[in-house]
Length: 213
Image 1 (cartoon, one colour):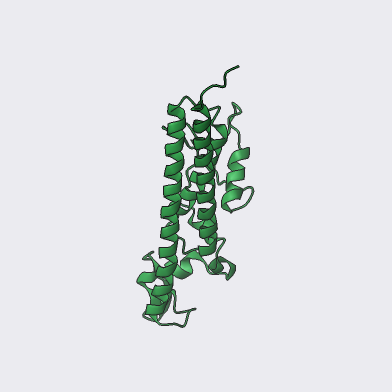
Image 2 (spheres, rainbow, N blue to C red):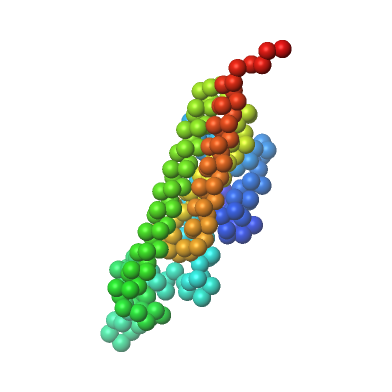
């Protein structure tokens, strides 16, 4: 199919998700990237959404572009040119960061590291929550649950997995928009645990002995 950008409803994670929800193939089926082998959920794959997450951060609101940080200006003789070694700003703090942030390199590195460490911890929690959901779905299916009976649970998996992947596939480890990344991962954790509880409840109900007439 023709390549497209899923931005018709906006750049936020839920707005892109809403676009995918409304998108229909000619046969009427909604969009999904792949079907989860263990649960059967129709899931989405985030494609390195650096631009989308950056657009929700303070640098975007301040008019700072990708090139300002990743290709900062440098002097070559009498000329001022963009550095074409595209890399992490933390490898070139003087030109990439200190032009705007008048603080020592050590402090700027520490700020960035703290943001990324917090994001990493949230990412691990979201991953554990999603694994809990997957295990609960597998157990429910082993007890006889069908995909139709677990439809609401699989929808929660789609939503949770999309949010987890949105942050995991974005290469700043949350730095481009820390609060937005934390919000997204918080929703991923919540929806994964909701799905896990619902799957466990179905299994518990299915294991109850039939009530005699």
